[in-house]
Image 1 (tube, rainbow, N blue to C red):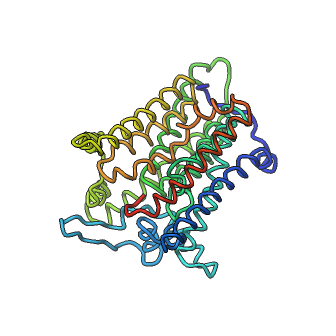
Image 2: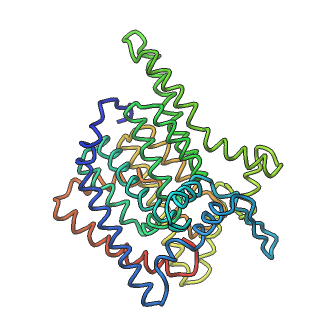
Image 3: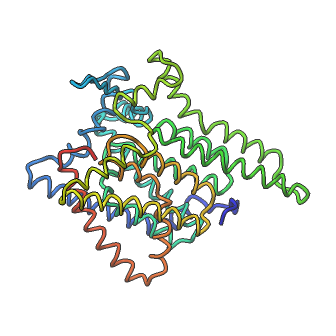
Length: 391
């Protein structure tokens, strides 16, 4: 399926009823993960809530919400970690929650992530259900829930918020609601740098739609109103990413590319995967670490294979474009190699081939598979979050 579908979407109440099994299953998996984290953290005399709300990136977002931009840390090696690297939508929402409730900024981040994770699960279901049917939609949501790094979906990070905006933007594109798609892409662009993946999906889908209409001009097509909505959606889509990047450039006095300098201060950039490849190669210098190197190669190969399968299964063009950009940005960034699984998490269309395979099994068998993986994911998430490095 490569052409966009424009069949009528179900009513909101009907859509919620249709998605209910996926959302209930998602809540159960995430609840299991939080219980495992609480038990593991208690055994190590740590606070599970602190791990979820007040470590690593969560602290940076909270500081932006409380004090605004301008904070930076200068390291002994000369690197400058500036909070300008963090896009503003999550801090804005944290500030809003704190303003209208007795919750702190950190509490607000946790609340936003919980709500956004459910919205993301619903959006993933909507996309998968639209393309492949209800059973595949349920399986796609549960696969996203049981990812090894799924605990991040419950942290005061921006991944859940971004995935929710991206999924619903993609669904709006698939159902021909261009202004909604563009608005959600704008918001996604205010959430994470990878918002450009949503922008690319909207633009490629829009251009493809105009091209199809031109080829089929004699057969009629959408009226001027639909075309105007499509153009408006395409114009709205890049405003979030472009607006923030240009604002950072103006604030730093370094022009349109100032944001790249901010990222360079974190030793983060796009090098085509050279640094990551060197990092993997260095694992083979000794035997124990060679096993980790082999695991990394297998992981990257699996991601590439899932993308190729998605192409062969003729996923809609917007999904392929979005997933391709998310994957390229995650694998080809030059720093924070341990965070790459987290950076890949918004690329949920990679899970659609596995969701289709699970949907083809008997319900009992697929439930056993997902249940076993959910337990393993919960245990790994608790172990991982209690570690020393940022996820």
